[in-house]
Length: 282
Image (cartoon, rainbow, N blue to C red; front, side):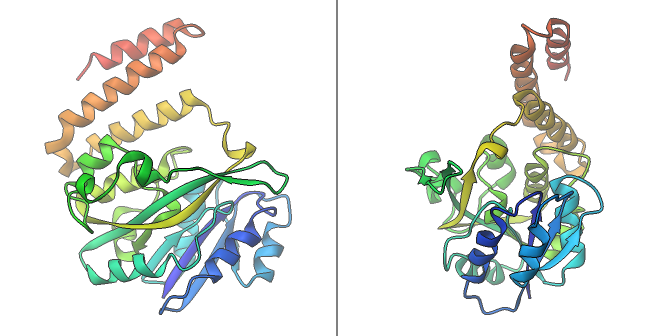
């Protein structure tokens, strides 16, 4: 079975389209869809139930807790993630699923992503280039036609995994402890880094995700994102099997601290100085 986990917060406007895009996937396995509502004040749950999804409430706020709850409530040997405001292109799931099934030691597979702008008036403007196209992400970059060679090093250098393009083995998800609910941001990157540290990671060249950009998801605080990224790097460095990567992780952490210091220099000079001093420590 394949379990599709969709966290949703006040997503009534989009959830129907997201679920329709899931139904447009012809796959050979039974599919269950679990929508996890996170403090919804609209009709998200009713729309999802009417579309045939199982709906549960998240035990805590945040995407990490919601996704973990969805996995706990699901039954599939394979887990796919989709955000409530995003879409899967038609017939885009089967190729990734077949690839993951063919490599038993792999923890996950991901695919390409195209963003599109939603003006709220029914106008959707797709971006000209996909993530793979704009980043030159091909077999030459990944090092193999299907596997990501040295995935942790490559993922530290470039964030190329979009959560809605991922299919993951349940056993790998559980072994890694799932998403870290203490992280309000970049909780997905944290899990992919931990997976890349310990497991085989696969990539599939086809378009796997249509990622919606709209007012509600474009206003993230740059400083909060930077601090979350630093916390993820520090946590990764503490992993027992990360010893061979600690120098590289430390260099990236220090660079991120210097970037955060530049962001905060004008408004918070003392905090900025503290970040600079932290970056000088190993």
